[in-house]
Image 1 (cartoon, protein in one colour):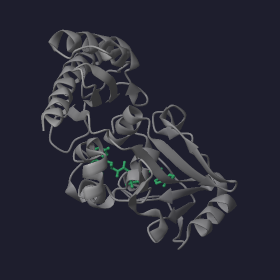
Image 2 (image 1 turned 180 degrees about the horizontal axis):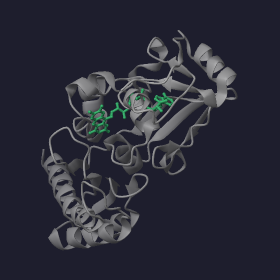
Image 3 (image 1 turned 45 degrees about the horizontal axis):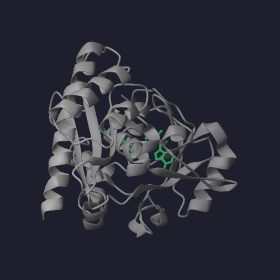
Length: 293
Ligand SMILES: Cc1cc2nc3c(=O)[nH]c(=O)nc-3n(C[C@H](O)[C@H](O)[C@H](O)COP(=O)(O)OP(=O)(O)OC[C@H]3O[C@@H](n4cnc5c(N)ncnc54)[C@H](O)[C@@H]3O)c2cc1C
């Protein structure tokens, strides 16, 4: 399969890239790792007249701490995140999740910004940003605006990024020392998109009760789903199988999966419950181990 004809520009700075996008409007699309865009072009699911390649803009690729936030440039590759000591230390939930993204070749090329901007509801990183209330910095002609996940993710493959705008940086808060985390998913084969995935963080108070729980799921809606009802069930409770089962039940009620060739809606609902309980067990055990150390 071959893509339709398109023009190609490879600007060296962000202002140059923004100027090209402004000039060409809806006819232009940015190219990041190409791991989703190039297959879509080849299958003729999209036909932009111009590709604006971001790969020669060094200012868009970095991982650094900024106050109590981890800041990641949109063009940072999945593999850089996977192997970053700063990510391992500050936000190991992200490291855990990114290991589930495709295969090593895809992680070497695909970018964090590309994955979030593509907004596949089955992808792992959107669930991490939904779970942690991560931030999205979007540059356009009027400067940079910052939004959270509820505004960013609109629908299947749709975000609030407007034509002429570029996602430039994404941010996550540092994981508290009292917290445990887990990312679990069920895929048919290693490296496949998950049928269902669960990201969770459990912060424990000194009294052995849950101070705060955060749960988000992938593969069960048109966007990543934050399970706030299940989080509320855990708040202030001593963790254990009874409360995990209640949280799983709440998640099962909250998700809105569809049936497709990979799984029925009912199976996805069942998996959401089972994987939530599994993720909570792992996160709590880890938080408790941290408290003992
Ligand atoms: C075989 C295979 C298996 C995969 N498995 C998984 C998986 O298990 N889990 C998973 O999450 N992903 C998976 N992926 C997708 C992979 O994660 C891609 O890296 C990701 O979806 C897109 O990132 P990219 O950098 O390649 O973006 P591109 O493909 O270059 O772009 C994707 C879209 O986002 C837009 N875009 C990109 N960057 C920006 C930006 N900075 N600002 C605004 N818009 C932007 C582009 O215009 C395009 O519309 C898989 C891909 C393949 C080919």
